Image 1 (cartoon, one colour):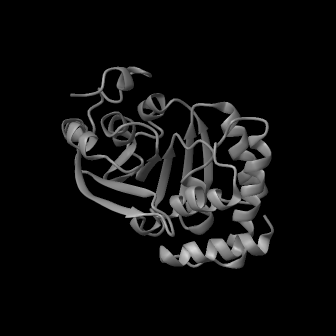
Image 2: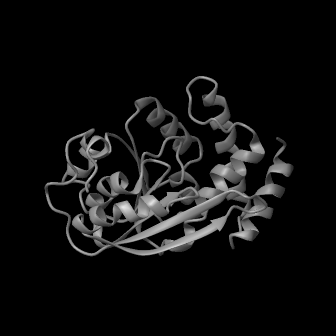
Length: 240
């Protein structure tokens, strides 16, 4: 896709989610897309390879959580994959200190190249299973915001995210359409882990029928040192 068409689409969709890009940001997003497509021929980073879909389903989708994030805070993106939503947030919000966590080293190598080529600052990558990350005193309960997109159901996701969120911080869970059952099933886990559901925002991505839900969980009290359990256990034996 030529850059003029790219800018046109980005600006069109951004307007619908109350975002305005500057020229530097658009250049960085364009470079990011091309690095993603280039690397995706070598390692499987995304099944979405049409530029129009990358713009909407990766970049714009990631930025739908921008409105929940206050200025000059820190955020960690768990199971970031190809960098979503963490890198789009960083490009648009240079005031936010971002940590990207992923368990696959090939993806970390990709993320490091994106960070270097886009000259992004105050953004860090960590190669780790999230359970190990959450038990590390360097990271435990250190983040104002913790987010994840399409990583696990809410019960399992809560055990991944809550231990690294500060008390009075927030977990921003990016989910697809039908989440009523998993929200109901996750209430016990969220409570045990020190959280409380603040709200659920439902919406559709611009010019589409793609439904999204953002679940905001407030961190009310410290998470017990029992959590997260060892790697693999939260997914095999969800809290009930």
